Image 1 (cartoon, rainbow, N blue to C red):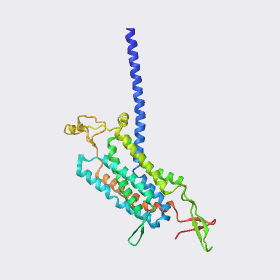
Image 2: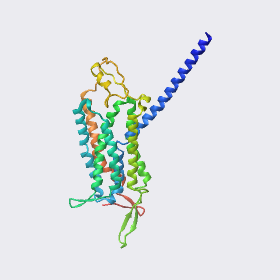
Image 3: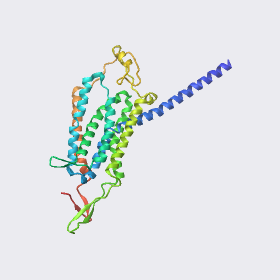
Image 4: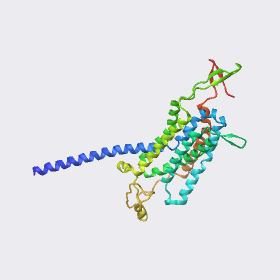
Length: 333
């Protein structure tokens, strides 16, 4: 009897030890999964944000000059046709639609576009009677199409995860504005102008402080971050980190869709949990008037955020007024 009691105690201890070990392992897996989702979502807008903060440096070397912010803003507005196309394809394909190929396309083409922009942003082409930065504008327009589609596709991908991981998505997209700004500070651009006498000693010419590294290096750093996003997405897709973290959203299915779920495929949940769906309390929906109000508010917010502010950000990063001889100021025309 005493021997049996000792055996039971040992088994209980082993079970508790294994339970603690599994919980610790799951906790670390959840942290890693959270970080991977954050890194993956860095590729959403970081390339275009990097272009906008670098425009004040590019302006002195491209023929478009100070018109380039408005041109980039127009590219961003025109690129919104791409999310409309993806929305149509989602409606047309129905359950056959999968966001996975689009994520690969967005990240990989984003890497290629950033590399092209890094090495060709100063190249010009004679077109319609003047020199134009065709390579720069083409790369920026491509990035605009990719980034405007990324928010739609990435959030669609997050339906596979538990709702608590939406925080990682918002954190990743929030860092797409912070990281380019920190890199800009490290670059050391935007210092005060030093006024130097011209050759004929009649006028003063402003000389701006030189950045610590070039636009090419800056864009290659942005490219490396997008490469890290691609690696993070591959790890989420092709390793068991999601299963270890128990991060997949369980899906309740009824009898008519049971066979489709068991067949697998891109649209099936990463960790399928099959339960017979039993309707309980009716789901609560927001009133139509509230929905229309929120939709209108979001439309106005998107109009200002993506239609107006991008063309003004360059001017805010390199103000017109600069200090000159103590209390006097030099203003650009």
